[in-house]
Every structure is written in C-alpha cells, then in structure tokens.
Amino acid sequence: MTTSVSRSPSELLSDELLRRAPKVLLHDHLDGGLRPLTVIELAAQTGYDALPTSDEQELSRWFVEAANSGSLERYLETFAHTVGVMQTHDALVRVAAECAADLASDGVVYAEIRYAPELHVSGGLELPQVVEAVNEGFREGERRAADAGHHIRVGALLTAMRHAARSMEIAELAVRYRDEGVVGFDIAGAEAGYPPTRHLDAFEYLQRENAHFTIHAGEGFGLPSIWQAIQWCGADRLGHGVRIIDDITVGPDGDATLGRLAAYVRDKRIPLEMCPTSNVMTGAAKSIEDHPIGLLRKLYFRVTVNTDNRLMSGTSMTQEFVKLAEAFDYDLRDFQWFTVNAMKSAFIPFDERLALINEVIKPGYAALATDR
Ligand SMILES: [Zn+2]
Image (cartoon, rainbow, N blue to C red; front, top):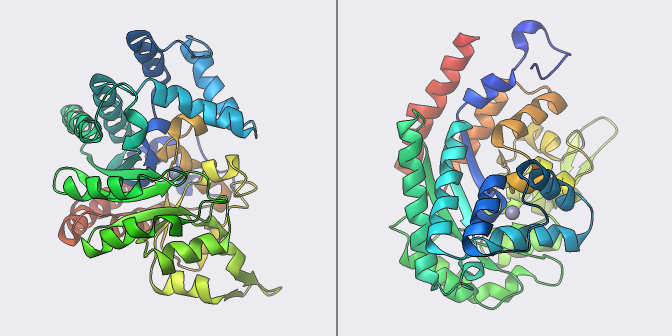
C-alpha cells in the first residue's frame, strides 16, 4: 500500500519500507502495548474476570473505541484490564518479552519502555520482584527477536504516579537497578492538579545520583507544566511536550517567533517525546495534519516520534511513520532525522548511542535508499 498520492512513484514510501526502516522508541507504556490475545489468556490463567469480551477481534476493537470515546472513565478502564492481568511474575515476563519481540519485528532497534512498578503489586509481588520480572521478559524478548533475525535493545524506565506518594521509593528503585536494565525514571498520570513539583525530592535525589529522567508534561496541561518539569525538576526530556506550541507565534508571512520557554527548549536541545496518534486521541492535537510536530520539525526542535500506548491507540512505530508521511510528505531523510534525534536522546551511555547511530541506523537508512 502506498502512503501518498502527491509524490512521484519513485518517492512513495510504502508501509513495508517504513517497517524495515530502523526506528527508535523512547515513549511507550508496557501496560499500553499488550497483544489482545495475551490479555485474554492471562485473564483466564490468573482468574481475572472483568474483561468486556473474550473474543480477540472484539477486544482489540473495544480497547481502541474505549480509549477514543472521550470518556475518562472508559479510558481508565482500558488500563484497569491490562494492569489487572499483569500481577504475577510469569505475566510480567510474558508481556515484557512479547513487547520486545513485537517492537523488533516492527523495525524498532532501540526502545525505552516505561511502567509503574507500584501498579503491579496487588498480587503479592514486591517492587524489586516486579522490576526483575520485567527485565527478565525484556531479555527473553531480545533473544527471541535475535533468533528471528531482528536485533533490538530494550531499556526500562520506572514510572511513578503523579497523584500517589511513592515517587521517592520508585526513584531509589531506578537507581538501584540502573546497571541491570533500568535506564531512567518518569512520572505519569493526570497533569492538572498534580504538578511535577510535588515530587521535587525524587528529582533532586536523581540529580544527585547522576541519574536520568523524563516527565510527562505539556500534554493535558500547558506551558506551566513544561516550565516546571524543566526549570524546577530538571527533566532531561519531556513526555509529549506538545503544548510548547503555545509559546510559538507564527506570523502571516509564516515566520515563527519563539517565546523564552520555547527558545530555551530548542536551544538546550531538550527532547520532545511526541506521540501523534495518542495526542489526537486525548485531544492534545486536533488531527495528525494539525499536530505541532510539523512546525516543530521545521524549526529543528529535538523532536522524536513515539507510540505511547500501542494497544489503546491501535498503532505501531511503523503506523506512526506512515501517518506522518501522509500528513507532512516526509521522506526517508526526515525519518532518519527523527530516529537519530531519538537515539541521541536515549538514556544509555553516549558511546553506545553513537554505535547504534553509526553502525545500525545510518547504514539501515542508506541501504533502504539504494533498495528503492
Ligand atoms: Zn505516556
């Protein structure tokens, strides 16, 4: 299937070509990316009886419809089901292994997958057991992917919930496991009413430990949230950050003027973890065509492309690239730029990022360009 009718045949990017393109994913939730069949099988195995249906196709549709319904209650229900079946060691290993394998077969070569350990303890697991189970799953998934001829490296980000009070504990957990598969920390949950400054002690602790963190900011709430995340909390990256557009004025001649915060974000090369389909579903952007990513890419912000919740958004990295190619006429050079941006912004050491850029990403795009 071709993705655009406006370009000459030689310029068309097929879904298959974009699937083969090396991709880097920095913002993806483990509990938002389960296979529908896995949800059904784990529910049966663990005695979870609240699923709306046990038909795979129907459940798959139900997740996307509920997440897209505009009702917060239904949206939250989707995560109640996925988290509900992720309360045992074996379930966490399986979900993490399938996550790594699915991303690898979608052409993702490096991923940072986040989850909130505190949401997986109702079956009796302790926080460290949750982290160890997920790490075990990621290693298993990496092996399975390699056996299938796809190479992927997966790092974990530990998320603390904004409305809860366990961020310090989770930050300590991230530091404890930093040499064993955990690459950073995040906070997530409702933005309005729960500013990141509620968790300052956790962020200050991480900074003293020379650890990395990202903060969900500028999705449901505007510039103050972004400003606090960067200037009060010291976030290395912004989860979404779409509302930075509120600090940019585009004149009638098309020239953009940046406010001080937007200029700071661009000058400091602060990575924006943008999730186009998810942002449209939550109302942070009107449509893919209207998504701020178009302008921010033109202005050379450090923009990255991400999936957020693959199950609820019915998406994948390839699908995000396909939609962007259609909306903005992007070509392989643009997708390589997004991918290199993401790799530069990863939380693994500099030399390892560089090796992936020079030995995997750039040669991968060069091979695609000559293939076509
Ligand atoms: Zn997110």
